[in-house]
Image: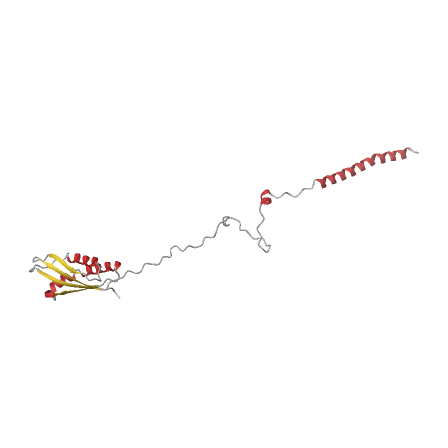
Length: 199
């Protein structure tokens, strides 16, 4: 054999291990790559522990509201209450304008009528105040107004009808007590006050 044959054989022998080593490295890297492939991340603990939505009888899951607008757990819907439904108070009953008439010997006396009629509004107020407690109050109240010679009031007598509360009569007596007449001989003035509710 020639020296050239041995030389070629020696070079082939030196290259074979290198080629095999490269192949082994490639196979190892491939296996390492397969073994080191990323695994899917585990779900967060809060998601795993969340309860499953409740299902209706037909098997369809019920949707639960979430977020800041969701009602608190266990909250019941508030039903409208019937408070504030009280009936309004009935309207205040008014009295028809009272009628004031002077009788007896002083009927038609203009100076006395002028003074007596000066308390007509006060007499009306007395009557309407009585209607608040006694809506059926009505009738004719008769007064005898006693005047001294100087024109001052001496006393007032009244006859209260059964259909009129005594508080109305007492109030009217007080109105007459503020009257003042011109000096004249002492006298008594007869006054009739007719009261009736407005229609």
